[in-house]
Image (cartoon, rainbow, N blue to C red; front, side, top):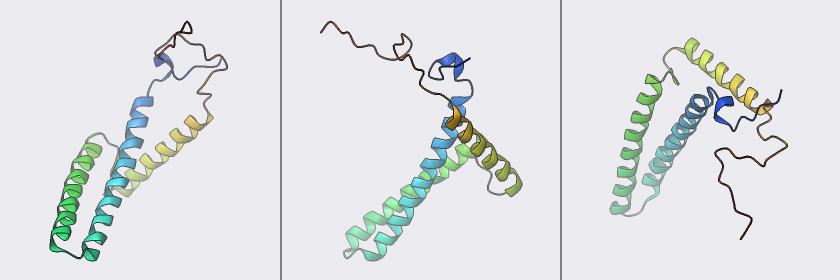
Length: 122
């Protein structure tokens, strides 16, 4: 049997998997932004520009802290227990492989589910 994973009844567990992956990607992006702001501070010529990069880096650090707290609460990140983090990472890899093997789009794409329908009368 082929499932249409775009339909809610066949997507059980997917939101949690997607949320954790998006949170990790967002965390990495925040860290890159902080690093870039720190480099920009050292290369900025005027004090006003340096101050702006400094404030951006502080805001990035605060955002990183908030996101990491969320990830800790959701059990998506555990950097202090490497064994636990390895188990989480292994689970993520298996989920990514599973998603890669799914037939996400069925042959028949004329569906009446949650997707927007375009009227052909126009």
